[in-house]
Image (tube, rainbow, N blue to C red; front, side, top):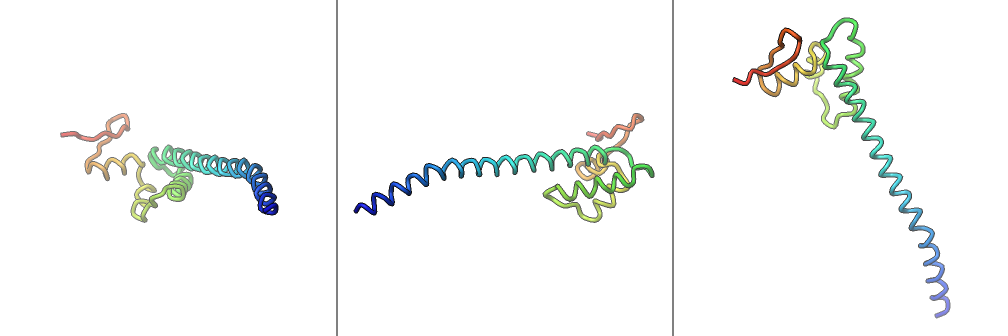
Length: 116
């Protein structure tokens, strides 16, 4: 009986030490996961900003980088046709045409949808 009490006392002391360590470890893991998601979101925002501009010879390489980043960090991967469209067109043109079927550019270079 005395060995059972001794075992329970040691077990209680171990749990008193282990529980805070486990809580710290879980909290750290959650923070790391949140930070990684935030970094991915920022990279996606940068890529989308780059792809919003009209393509030119000067922006070819940075567009390819942005497409790779977008495909790497997005949960839904781009197919080859979408990648080729992004190489030739701005992302807004692709989104509007794909979503609505009709997209137009006004004299300021802004994209809009004909709602009629």
